[in-house]
Length: 212
Image 1 (cartoon, one colour):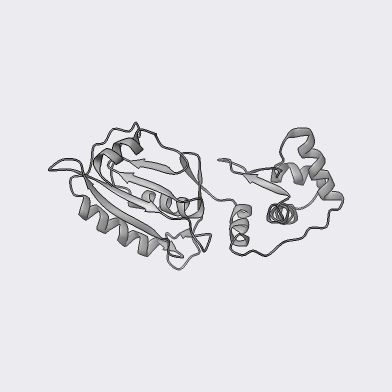
Image 2: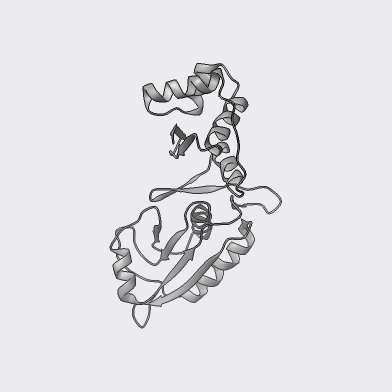
């Protein structure tokens, strides 16, 4: 990517597929952004670009690149696919560009401790948020083409009626109207999404389910 291409892309602003970082001081945050892209539709990350789109660059881009890619190896499981590039903007400064591809083995996790499972992140508009337990399970099921048939019973009918009246339903809503424990309500929503009956819409504090 050349400087003109970089300027054109940055002018679009941050979004679902595009993220800017002013500097690489907080490597763990950068790695979490990469996990979120891999667990979503992929995306592009530019380090050395302000949130407002001003291209400031990094003084030691190659050193930052080495630190970030070491962190990727240490803190992301399973491995993600990406490409990296240093884009000079003048004689002294460069922008570090990462293109992250959608993972084939979702979900990928960010691991603080290599001995623990870690946390999955997903992309929500121009932010990266931690995936709910339901979202993690849906990502796991998306790995294969297996169908997940669902018997439509009393609780499923109650879900459809609630969505018809309110536009969407949450896990908490389902627990209230059905009396189901959290684990059972969670499993029901996951099955309905995996069966292509419902779709999941991410929120910062809760997920929303509506008819697909």
